[in-house]
Amino acid sequence: MKFWPIVFLLLIVACREKTDFQFPGDRGFAIEGLLTNKDTTQWVRITEVSGNLYNDGITGIHPERVVKGVANARVYIIESDIRGEISIINLHLDSSRYDTRPGVGGRDTVYFGYYIVEHFKGTPGRTYTLTIDIDSTWAGPASFTASEVLKEAPEIDSITGRYATVFQDNAWNYYFHPRVYFRDIPWQKDYYMLRNEDEEDQLLVVDDSYAASGRAFSPELPSNKRVGTSNSVNVTVSIYNISKGAFTFHKAIADQQQSDGGVFRPLSYLPAGNITERNEERGIKRLGYFMVAGVKTITRRVVVNN
Image (cartoon, rainbow, N blue to C red; front, side, top):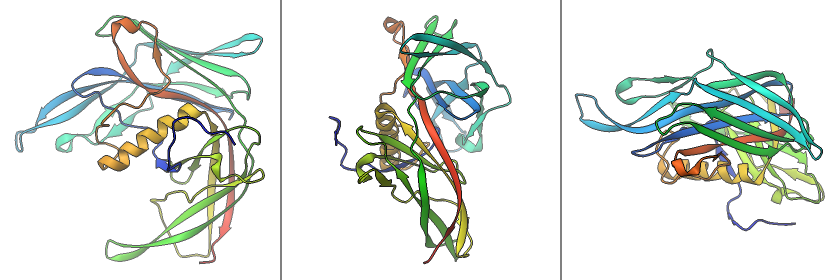
């Protein structure tokens, strides 16, 4: 089975769906997006991020991130195949969507910047190219682009799992950790993202090293949700067939989060994503990933024997 040049000894990583980026002492754009083969709302999030200092008047000056949603962008996706362009999908700003992150001194930061298209599903084998045009930035006009091919997701065979018992808050608490069995797509190197739909921020990224004769299994998905002690539990899991670039990007971020103590801490380096800027000479910094992936989702009631 082929392996790629950048060797990771640990091919398993838990991460969050959206990431909090920082450009220390500088400004830039964080761009994230997801397009799948589900008939659902596809989205792109564009935020302007910069380093700053904040004096809370009590404990002194602290570093703070300034995060601002971008509302003046033109966002569209070109769908194409080997014969050429098929369609152009325009995304519109959704002012009802926003994110919240903890701020310094108890001040939460609310920021927007979501662009969406509703009731659209991608087609496996086609290429989707994201283009973002912003007429006015601190460095002049900016144009960003990213492109990926949508690959078919594998079928999920079954789900198993176990309870983990943790003593916290002066009591024993139970967490269910699912494990997914699926059919690996043969004759190619594949990378997968698994998501516990009951806990939106709990993801797992793996490659197909776990596959044997076309059958694969995942390590246990992480869990932060307390459950009861029943011998069965309902579980909804999705599996995404992601690109090598998406795998590398999300693993780099998760490695940073694990080593520096948390998702809201600065990254010591900026992982390379697939967002490019057409006018590189302007030096506009950007990071993030536009991910295109086939996805399959199942719900099962899992009997737990332990």
